[in-house]
Length: 177
View (tube, rainbow, N blue to C red):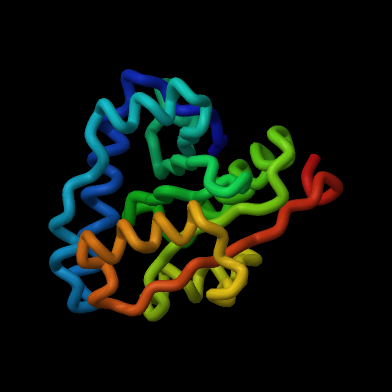
């Protein structure tokens, strides 16, 4: 397996990964999240063009099979994980963690001090998982304006129906090869 930059021709496959990953939310009583459509090709193209979209790819067969992806924004000077999804048929292989580590490397490359994300507090593969990956829940007092605006937008979309949190993982250039 390898992590590499996403390519424009792969965007429909990223949408399919997102749909497959979203189905798991139905099992925890969140069908609205399961039914949510993935980002459009146009939106995903912007992440690829900006160099902030990565995929996990199985190297065998030779043409590769996409296992998961991550897209990121710059929010308050940090690399903000907008979406990370792994196809459920490939879960529990460390793919999400590898994608997060690639985003952390990117943060070091661009001089960002941290990764941030927003997520569901009580979904096992959300906040508890990110906690195991080095993220900590942010106290409301340290949430900066752009991240606060992200949370307000999520609230307007109805995501606050379930408890959500902002999380941060500091990055350190000496932690990566």
